[in-house]
Length: 385
Ligand SMILES: Nc1ncnc2c1ncn2[C@@H]1O[C@H](COP(=O)(O)OP(=O)(O)O)[C@@H](O)[C@H]1O
Image (spheres, rainbow, N blue to C red):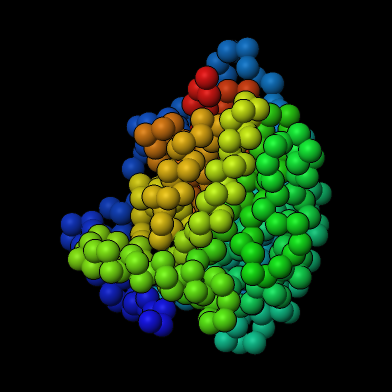
């Protein structure tokens, strides 16, 4: 069986509207104010003023998603539902960096949640040159960027290129815990395009950040000789054979622009989170594609999101999952107390607006200060007792 999930945008739009119980005007599709923790701005300032003895800022970090820069006129997305401001996204990145650099203290690092340039560059043969432009802006940041790989990285480049490029930030991995752990916690020592792209780091005592590869399995990379292709093919064969009806009716997220997790990555994640549990760390996991169905609006969901969720929910250390991919953004608090935040996409921010944030990390909570379309939220940690 060849791998093919290619569904037309028209089909996807129909599916999405069906999921929502019929056609809805754009403004009705907007997120309503959450009634669960993950409070919005007005409540946030009130909460921050409460003197609860836990006001010492540990550190902060920047978040930004779906820059999707291209030297192309503005145009609607493939579904004709939302405008994308391709050239302007570079100016917005520049101003986000200027703002972060002015903050005191400066964010310790920035999470770039994937889709740094758009696939239009591939068609225009401008992928490498425009990636350089974006990276030139990023060099102005006074703190390291951690680069996630989204679908557009894989449309523009192959893994060999990405592995050898500045978009590979695995050198920022924390290697210091290997000696104290009884098990291997670095997923791969050597840079190898056959491997999934994932790593972890600890910017502050008892806090760990884990990047996961939501395109470990995917249909974007067409290298039929790769182990990844074979695993993807087998995964989709089993999935489709198991219950074709469900696949059709409910699994609307089995689309080419999403991807999934292989067994090796899920095992590695489980081992790492076991270490963090034992060491009473708080862990923020991040990747391009959302892994909770309620944290996004559209069909943007990892294929085997249930497997990834099961791993995260099995470990009390996990407090938050951060993603991009769905440019409208989203949020939910899952049944285990993990916050799922989907960041609004920069490329859909018109001139005068914005989409990035700074997350402030405290003993008992993280506070997201969102700019422009990015919503501000207070994320209290679940208890890890
Ligand atoms: N049915 C749909 N209708 C409108 N927008 C959608 C639909 N499905 C996905 N999207 C949007 O597409 C975006 C994903 O964009 P992107 O990663 O650029 O993929 P692509 O380039 O294939 O459009 C998200 O903002 C998501 O909300």
